[in-house]
Length: 109
Length: 200
Image (cartoon, rainbow over all chains, first blue to last red):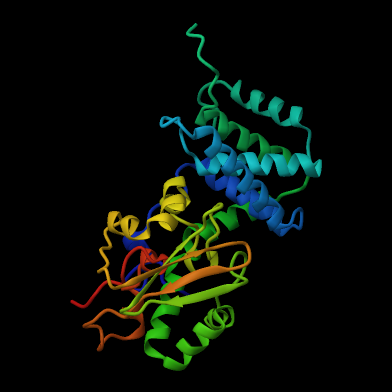
């Protein structure tokens, strides 16, 4: 197997964390798992990601304070894709997120 | 209240992803352990060290280099690397006269099996837009000053083709073995925004 440390591990020398927050890695993992399970063609997701990025760029034009988040675009694309596939209802997701937000402090992990 | 527009905070995003995972898990659409495994693979096992192996082999083995430049996907598979986002690989060779640099102007296409996931700057709107229009200036800002007589070629990755730059072997590395050479090959050199690190 390949070394992940030591001399033969160049990426750690100029690397950076692949994900900036845990939700980004979960989002990536969820997307890959669904794809591997044959739930969608990658190109279908990619087309939506391109749309979401372009949409942000149009909205951000002339707004230097617009905050760029790649994985936010990814999330928007995935939600659109899954809604299109009918894998869950939009209300279902919103309700669940709200329920999670209502957890008492200290239980949000 | 201030009357500002509601903003979608990062905390809300995290909750939404958590909710999404929970729903998909309950419906039997994803296996949390599979998700864990995929994340771990991309954080630990799949990364630029794979591409560095490919480059080092090409530096020491002219026959391999010839195969790599004519059919990169097959030559990379010889070393055991392949999979999603690496089906159609093309390797472009840097020479004293030509410097290659890779971008994805539309999104973030990138050769995962050999480089892992792209760094944040590769996905940024600024890099994607500017490296095509003014590659020399962008490379200089990233710390790579190229002399005026070096031609710069910009390759736009797509769903169909993923590019990997074969950097020039640095001077002073004639005595190094393949493992030591691989350690000189950085991710940025294989994207084309820097050079492999020299001898010493």
